Image (cartoon, rainbow, N blue to C red; front, side, top):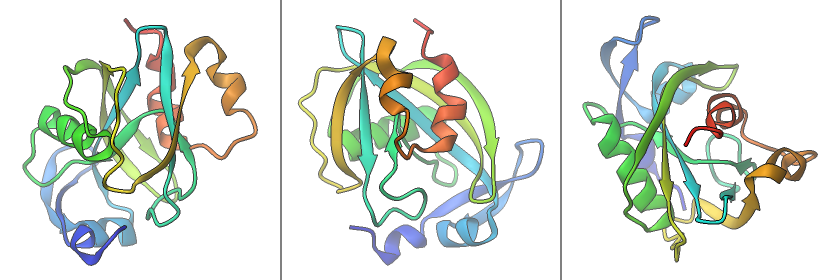
Length: 168
């Protein structure tokens, strides 16, 4: 479950050009909706399915929502690729080779982020030890939009990740 230590994690605050302008705590970033760096990792298996998961109810952003990628905030000074590998290990309990899919930005009333998107292939088994994920299912990529229809879904990953799912 979430604790105060997460709120005190230092992250890089960015300006409109994506340049680091300082460090703030995660709590400060959320409170003021500051621009920061994030990573998304798409997990596919060998039969063209995507691992979709439902976020825990205690998450500070979009609790109980379904997500098409594991994701997380990049720590202050942390390399993008290391952040992606860390998130994969923390959220799914796996280490796997990452392939870069692209980058983009997303902004709404709750989050402002510059993100890099990665992909990995894994059949699991997965370990949801950090309790951020409460449920996970494999969904055929060809049926993804239909499966998500009518469900509460994280808007940032839909905007940033979904357009890149046709990438190899």
